[in-house]
Length: 410
Image (tube, rainbow, N blue to C red; front, side, top):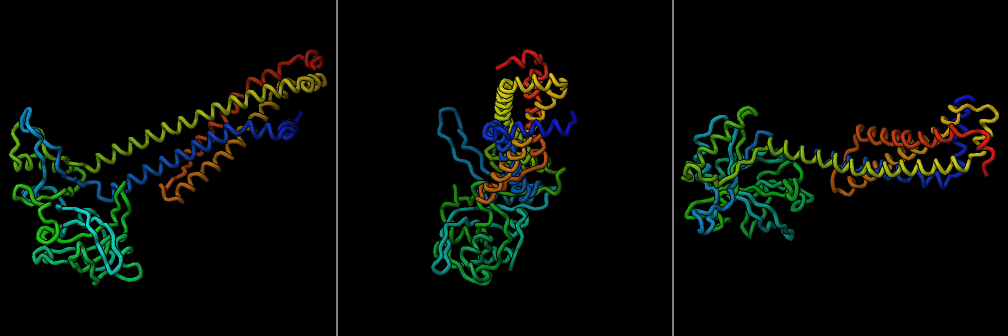
C-alpha cells in the first residue's frame, strides 16, 4: 500500500468521527495554548523589567535610608534618614563617578486652570535628569541658576504635560503646586511606567526651592535637611563595586557608625537588581510553562484512550485488511498517522489560540506579551512528541491483531 493511500485512509477514519476527533484534541489545544500564552507573558514581563531598569542606567547606584536601628537592646528603634550634607560629602569625595544627584520627593496637588492631578513632585539638582537618563523634549532642565535663586521653575514629565496641557505646549506656561505658582521651563520625553510608579507622571523643581517654599518641616530632621535618595552614576561597569565601597565608607563616617554596627542606609545596585529580577522572572516563566505542559500530558493520554477505542471498534476492518495482504507496518503506520494528525492539528490550533491570548493581554495594556519562536517550537514539538509517544501502543496493538481472531470479532 502506498504511503499516500495510507494517509488518506487515516484521515477518512478521523473525518468519520468529527466530534470525537475534536474532543480528543481539546487537551492538546489547551496545553499548547497555555504554554505559548504563559511563556509570552513571562518573556514580556522579563523584557519590561529589563527595559525599565536599564532605562535608568545599568551603572546607577541608588542610596536610600536603611531600616530603623535599635541603639541598644530594649531601647526604641531610632529612625534613619539621609541628609543633604551626606550628598555634599559624597559629591566632594567620590571618585570614578559620572554624576551624583540627591532628591526629595513627595506627592502634591498640581493644577493648571481647572485641571488638577495628584503628582509626584521631586526637588532635584541640575544633574538629576542626566543621572537618571531622562531626555528633554522641549525647553530645558533645572540649572544651577534656578537652585541659586530658588526659582519657582519646573520641568514636567510627558504624562503630566499631556494631563495638564492636552492641546498645547507646556513650556512657558504656569502651573500651581499646592497653590504656589511655578513656570514650566521644560518637558521630558516619555520614559514609561515602572512597577506601581509612572516615571512620566512627574514634576521636577529646584531642590533649594522645595526646601524653602514647599516641603516645609517634612524635609527636616534634627535641624538637618533630608533627602529621600541619592543617585550615583558610576563612570563604567568596572567601577561600580569600587564606588559602592567608597559610598559605604563615607556614609558610615558621616553617620558616626562604630565598627560592627549595621549600616543605616541601603545601596541598590541596578546591575545586580537586573540580574536578580531577570533570573526570578525566567525561572517563574519556565515553571509556569512546565505546569501548562502537564495538560499536554493529559491530552496525550486522551489521544491514546480514543485510539484504543478506535482499534476496538475497527477490529474486523483490521482483520479484513490483513487477510487481503496488508502488512503490520501498513496498519501501524495508519494508526500512527491518525494520532499524529490529532496532535499536530491540536498543536497548530493551540499555537494560534495562545498567540491570540497573548495579543489580548497586550491590547488590554496589562503587559506587552512577546510570543517567541522558541516557545512556539517547544510547544509544537512537545505536542508532536506526545502524539507519537501515546500513539505507538494503540498502533502496535492494532498491527499485531491476528487476522482470524480479528475477523471473528463482533
